[in-house]
Amino acid sequence: MTKALLALEDGTCFSGRAFAGSGEVYGELVFNTSMTGYQEILTDPSYHGQIVTLTYPLIGNYGINDEDIESWKPHAAGLVVNEASRTRSNWRSTKSLADYLIENQILGVDHVDTRAVTLHIRSRGAMKCVISTTDLDRDSLFAKAKSSPGLVGRDLSSEVSTPDAYDWPKDDANYRIAVLDCGIKRNQLRMMADRGIAARVFSNSASADDILAAKPDGFFISNGPGDPDAVPHVLTTIRDLVAHGLPTFGICFGHQLLALAHGGTTYKLKFGHRGANQPVKNLETGLIEITSQNHGFCVDKDSLDSATLETTHINLNDGTSEGLRHKQQPMFSVQYHPEAAPGPHDAAYLFDQFILLMGAQGA
Image (tube, rainbow, N blue to C red; front, top):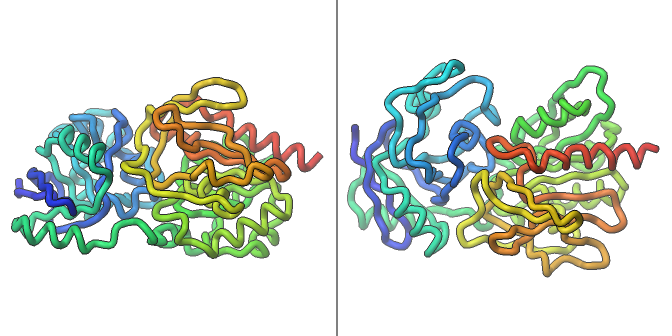
């Protein structure tokens, strides 16, 4: 095993060993509190540009399989864990976590005090980071971390969006929707298909005319990485489609874009919400949902025009925006992930709500 150093822009350094790959990577260091789902986390495009620390101490014990990937490849810049399992035990497993990371040129580091890493980020905030097995000079690594680009102001969504439109077919579909791919997770499309929805998935560079030409019954905006303020071209498309009266549903990055498109603002959270155990209150029903989340930016709910938009959900940990609804147009969104991969199923009803919205518009 090769020694690795993890250096943060504030001058903090953690040591470990590379259990997969070698070299040097940079990204924003974040943590995820899920106990399972490392494969789904790694392949979630929303982690593009980030180094992920997993708080659960033993990672890799059930290996990797071909069914649970959320996109065409892993997107995390690096993986930091306390202990990488040397054995894998699951009937669906086809390879080890280490082999998967090496195959995809992702640096994996273990023997790191991930509790200390997490406490540091919670105290100081998510920050730019460099992990290296080749440069073990701390001052050099600190300088590299400081000069790395970070996430603020970066359009990472366009880097993970599909270059060409494609179909996610469903035989005998009841509804056909247009999907704006800002970094979509496949389970969103799977859950749509399970409910009789066929999808035409468009690049985030698609225009409103491109999307309307497909004659969709509804419009869906996916999750994605980076700063939502960095994609003004997407906001123009969204405004045109919502104004057209197309039933619209947004998740995570899509929630942020819908708020921005209607005059709201977003800001960067201190350390983000990432995990499968985040409590959210539905303000309409009073019910509490345990949700899966992955976001570092957030909608400022006080910036929303109360004549146009209303907040529908809030995070019980910090009171931040978790959902909104348009008061005149058939549009709603949530910050969290109802497709729950990985995570609980409390919020799956939102896909049914989208169907009801399309049915009401088509009646």
